[in-house]
Length: 557
Image 1 (spheres, helix red, strand yellow):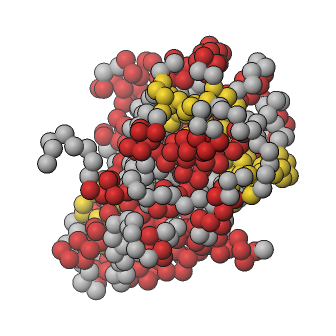
Image 2 (cartoon, rainbow, N blue to C red):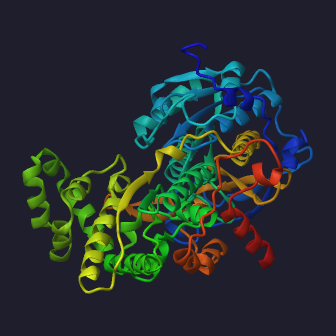
């Protein structure tokens, strides 16, 4: 065995996997068919004013047939933007293979370490050997990623210079809602300058919140949700075996609870909190703690002093008293960030307490010091670093205090010991499931056809994803049609609206039907690891979320 070998037995075997393509893309000849024009659901006038050159474009669909698309050689750039998600390398493989199928003289350039690599001219030519080394693998390490944005005129001009020097016809941005929004801004900037450079986006995020009726899934969600489901089900089995711990498991998902909901449907843990429901019911932290303690007490009466509680990463942002608190804190951080960052810790907390409104000040002062500290940090986009909040530890402390009070009055007569977990990074770079391997390859392959059709400011769309891959319908949606105006860092900004859990949707309703039974008795399902070979119903199955949403869509037609 070589000490420096980086290829596992599984990785070597997965190289041979040939991703499945939708029927239209397998035909060898394509047409890009124009459909209706879709406008933003709101703020249309503001979006039109910001994107005069790329607004009002039609949806398109890729269909079999000779659309007389160009077969000229073309150079294309690709950049990975934001956090990694399983399948990114297959997006690049799909782009590369599609370009070579059109004309082997084409070239694909990968910009290194994210969007900054575009305007600084840091790139590598992607070769067949490079692509083959990364087929069907997880991660973004082929060319790296980054969270920089292309915003200033100087940066836009840098992109123009580099792309023209490379003879690129288009830039493909692989990223989530912020990255695809940045792609729309870049496409508009190119058009405003009279540059015939195209920008196409591919929809990525394991959170599952960049989707709508035209983009039914963001890539990476399938693999990440199945990976987290395996981890949570392992903990469920341990909990049922040891019978002495409540495991509080926080799962990645900064805004939406799609990951937590999918894991709940897959594994059936004791309790799963859904942020969107908590917001809809206007629940306070005390309401949440009381409900958890009620379940723990009822299980204790049956001799069940253990269980598994799943918590979405962004939970506290949806809790009644925390919503205004986070807004007040963001406003304070925006106004005093330099002063706060320069202070010693002993001065920061009193400063923040003094400058927050009374209700928010009292809440901040009541939090553990570790949470107070994390809340004074922001990411590169000016967002509070919610992912670093140890919500699971905080909830354990709150539950323990409440159970102690209940024990004193005799309403809790069991034992309570807890273990905190955060599963996040474990799911971002896993070997992609067959679904994500197929989906990402198809997204990349479709992206080339949109470029050949001369489109810009589009994200590749995907529908009918609950069906076998041969029946998937791919096309493109203008990014401007998905935008609305949000306040970011105190300023109105165009952004793609995040898709939150639909409380009237099939997945949540299926969860509601069963969750009381899961609280009362152990109903854990043990899903095992992601499977790559075997029956299609095991290896190629989409998420339960996608299946239930597909059934509801088809029933509505």
